Image (tube, rainbow, N blue to C red; front, side):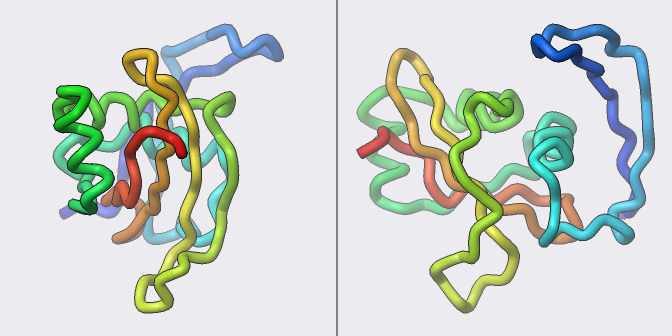
Length: 138
């Protein structure tokens, strides 16, 4: 498996409107400090993560949310990939579970008119996104 990813970069202006989307860069994941990503780096990684590399923790709250609102895992993955800076709430934060390394990031956004709480972490040198929480905000 390659430790390089190719990113399609969207360049936005101050008003967050896309200026250009035809720029391409490669990042050596081994040289990227996953524990000290900037928000922009994180969002870029999320946008370019293959959906099969987004994994969900099967917590009761997450499963119940999906069942109650009939939202597929595929749709949730698309929502993760589409997170942006206006959805950002907090992070990087230490994970409460001391058995797990790597910081967590918190986002909140509307999904099907439901205000959702989303907590994620990046592992395996940026190759895997773990969705710890994706449910209705309390």
